[in-house]
Length: 241
Image (spheres, rainbow, N blue to C red):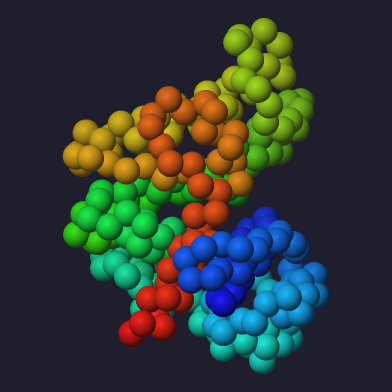
């Protein structure tokens, strides 16, 4: 069985795959990661593992993880199942590498736009030839709410909610501005890619997947586990080399 460890900006996830099938997933924090991994080892026989991190982890914990598993540490040098034409490949986030790997593995011979709605909203496009040129990064929903509060004197700190019909109060005006901004941004970028690429497949993933999927009119595949599946596909790709 394969183990996937993903350390994001906000959450840490641990997943176990039997070939391509996800059979276990748990969210935790970096402080409890080793404890969770030891519990996983009690339940499953792990053959290989992959580690991906966009956040920071204590070096002592990382060294202990390396001792526990036959570990692939994802970076710009790792073998991947697509052609990376990003102009600064060393700066490309490992989360985005994993998402594109998942796209070409699950949707071969297709143009794919992956939208990852987490701390930031990332847009990554890979074409039918498995060529990746890049995408876009914008602030996520929570970041937009925080910035409105932080950079003003009197506006409150709010969290996402059902979008109001009209901004008839300060709170509703903030909700309407933040959420409509996100919805229209996503719809606009989707339409831009559709106009340039025939038969476009759209994947929506990340922590805000469920919330956004209820408000986006375009036809999408919503999959909150897509990044984990992408990491597993990279591990399989490397084991087959």
